[in-house]
Amino acid sequence: MINHKRHKRLLKLLDEREHASVQQLMEWLSASAATVRRDISWLAAKNQLTRTRGGAQRLEQKKKSYTLSSETFQNNAQQNTAAKRAIARYATSMCNNGETIIINGGTTTFMMAEFLVEKQLKILTNSFLMAERLLVTSDNEIILPGGRVYREQNVILSPFENDVAQHHYAAKMFMGVYGLSILGLMEADPLLIQAEKRLIGQAEELVVLVDSSKFQRKAGLVLCGLNRVSTVITDTGASDSAVQLLEHYGVRVITVEPEAVDPRVVEASAMSSHDYAAVLEAGAYGRHAGLNS
Image 1 (cartoon, rainbow, N blue to C red):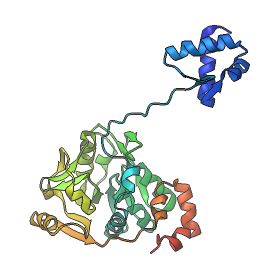
Image 2: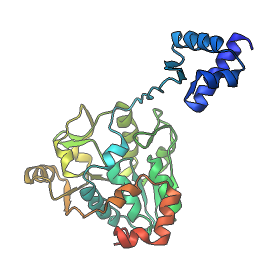
Image 3: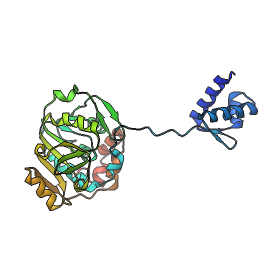
Image 4: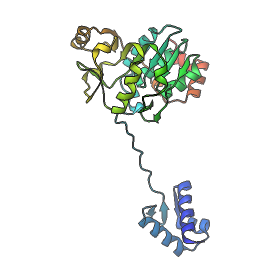
């Protein structure tokens, strides 16, 4: 076998098996021990594999970089879940059947999916996980904008002005944000700001879902001022001064008591939608984790 073909075959074998001994490579490549060792040395020098005692292994895959600097959806889903679930439940109670609403990607807004199952709404969302979940578990009409999928943040964002959002008007937009201050709603990513400003522009009423920890968070970008916010739903951990500040700017503030959350409710967020639907249909979560309470 010609050298370059053998090298290509060796790397393919490592991709499939992760590591191999010299003896295994001799058999798979029909080559001598000396030839295999020379190949390993040459490819290691080219930084295409890693030499090991008695063999070789494929290089560790570098973690892909993402242009969004915000925290991952999975990490955020584990934080303040009791407050977020109560906030999501109340937000869903504000939705009237037949309405068109917008829901942005975020862990608090995603928890609305559980309570939206019995609703009949037209929902525009840039959360692909929420869209998938609702398509499987509900009869709501789901609309997704076009754009790039950011897996770790669970959102679809487009840098272009002309996307599907501009053709839909919503009575309400429900959104979570990185932080909230006297300056308004705060975010950390310019691309997120650009996309969400377009969504905000398509809604009559802006409802912000933030657990009390968000009042302490600072970011370098302002999404919009408090004058654009109709309602803030938060938990009872929010300070009196924070609530009074919002009310001073004409924002309606609703505080809810955090709910007790079974750990399996948090685990459900990581399920595939089909598995989640099967669990709901069986009634197991409704009985044991209070999903149908």
